[in-house]
Image (cartoon, rainbow, N blue to C red; front, side, top):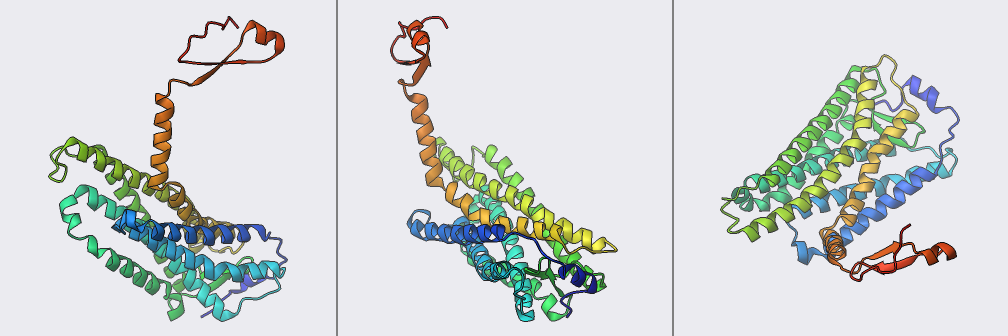
Length: 343
């Protein structure tokens, strides 16, 4: 298995001027964010009782946490050494597997979360009878992702060290037919997963907006309203994750397809930016969960309702006296502003 082709080697021998700040920020925020998200999941486990949705969130955080933890310390070491530290060839194979596994697992877990919400809203009776399948689904995702990530290690394609020799991935900067087939397969699989995720989320939103009043599970209007609130919260979280997932993933997939179709594949700053965008998805996901937790949204909603219902909202107005002194007066809506004058 080749690690670098000749054209890539010439580019990688050039002097690098990349800053160490982006990888440090990405590594710190990503590792801490996923760890904190896991802490909150376990700390509040009595509240959510490890429902299927929260099991998927936990699996996503574990996948992203391990992917970042095993990559960034070594990558930052190369930046800190002013690019004099060289990756061992064995680590390049490991890094390729790590990236391929983490990227694909995260995409499939997000897709599974979307499908889970779709069946929960569309077929609630059948869904309640199959919630115990969540662990098997997660295990299947991890096994399938590991199998696909192992293709380059087993000879189906090769691995490549990319600019500025701080990360390794499947070789989509090669002219070899086997490498291009592997690239097309991986990129097409990711696009397929993305399409399923978007379609199921749109279907979930449509179903929530049109909850059937004759649903056997919803015995009265209160139950129906409560379920709609719960589902709306989860869909809000899911849509945020899916939108960011799409924005972060598309650049790398596009770069892979362009390079696989090009007569002169590139290995430079464009590829580095694309993979940083993809890694950003693993960094942002836990913070979305931390910020958009149901408890936080409920508190914000209650605060907004209090402000709206309050009869003592301060109003700032100007008087003749304040014009002379340059000051402003404050009044409450609950009391008549008898001292106010024309501006």
